[in-house]
Length: 161
Image 1: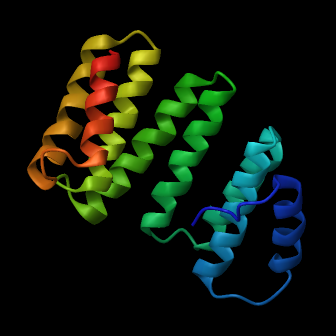
Image 2: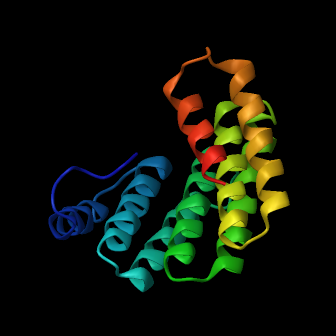
């Protein structure tokens, strides 16, 4: 789902050209979403947010897992510009969708718990942060083998607290 590995300005140019063609809902979603990511990487937050909203609109308000991905990216955008309350709001929305679609015991859901925990840490809410990160790690421990890279990364986040 991530955009192509060349300059963001070039990516934006090609994504804009591609949007003018006919696509199914998810293809159109991917175009807008990737364009939003490219704008965000360039620091064009207003255009990025507009493209993320277009991506969400392209799915006709249906609950797809992709919506959680876009909400997480919008959360990251708001975090980058210092709007932590909005960042929290969108990260919670992403988590709610993942819990509904994937369940509470899933790798993707665990990643959302850990991301929320890291954001609460940035806000100085350490107890809440620790609770969420521990919840995410426990899920990963129940799924991954002991030295799995994702689990080791999560341990690193936990130690960082």
